Amino acid sequence: MNNESLVSISDLTKEEILELLEKARKFEENPNQRLLEGKVVATLFFEPSTRTRLSFETAVNRLGGRVIGFSDASTTSSSKGETMHDTIRMVANYADLIIMRHHLEGAARYASEFSPVPIINAGDGANQHPSQTMLDLYSIYKTQGTLENLTITMVGDLKYGRTVHSLLMAMYHFKPVFNFVACNELQMPNEYKQFCDEHGIEYHESTDFSEEIINKSDILYMTRVQRERFTDLLEYERVKDLYNLHNAMLDNSKDNLRILHPLPRVNEIAYDVDNNPKAYYFQQAQNGLYAREAIICKVLGIDVK
Image (cartoon, rainbow, N blue to C red; front, side):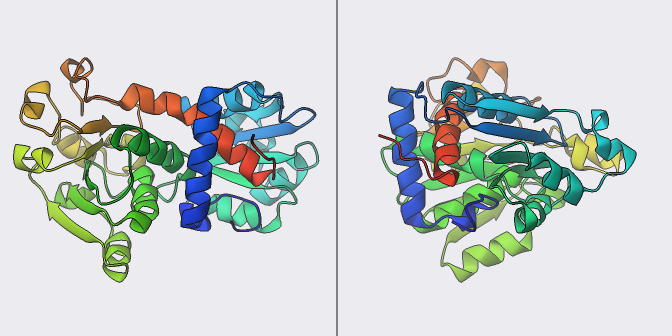
């Protein structure tokens, strides 16, 4: 791990990923442990969040720590012109760990370069979301019994979707096959396809969300088309509803298929899917608590029994 911070999933080795999954399993068995007694954790959310912020704050509370921070940057001195550098240095005076979400790509990496306390990246623009990746990996492992040799289909906003970027980079350790389903405007960026090429990862691209692709998949990873990433709202309106999953589309899918989604959803998963046993996105969100407890202990060097 790079400098104790977790900024990108690539900061973790395969062994560290597997260690974190084992710690998450232990936390699922016993989420309430007083391992952060006397510790203060700052959550700095310069961008809106529900699940990530609440699950991190719940993780700190269940581990016996205290939380300070903000969820609206407009109420802080950054609205007066304070630089991120000064904000981080100031908050580090009060906290043992900073958990940070920011709309700018690379913001967490920048903060980690001068912060005297560890930084956990809770999402930086369209770049990376490593804690989401860990809960995704834990969800995949729980439902499939393995991370090896799985066919993972990613659907929707693959251009701006930081969750799919991080998951792709993490899965390269485990010999996956990827299907990338997106319109031309939202296809997986070339840098991530190049990453697949360099690491010998098989992938296929399609603009057609067909049942043939669904039926070959072990994991179906749906994503929301993110209006906040678009500068042209007309373009957003044109592409926002291109890929919608309905229950009937799952009739011939594999028994072990599980549907994941980082949430929030808009229209991309119909409500008739929710009662299908292959829908796993709400349990996936619950797994975020255990994965984030494991990450917090990892960056703070705390052993989990």
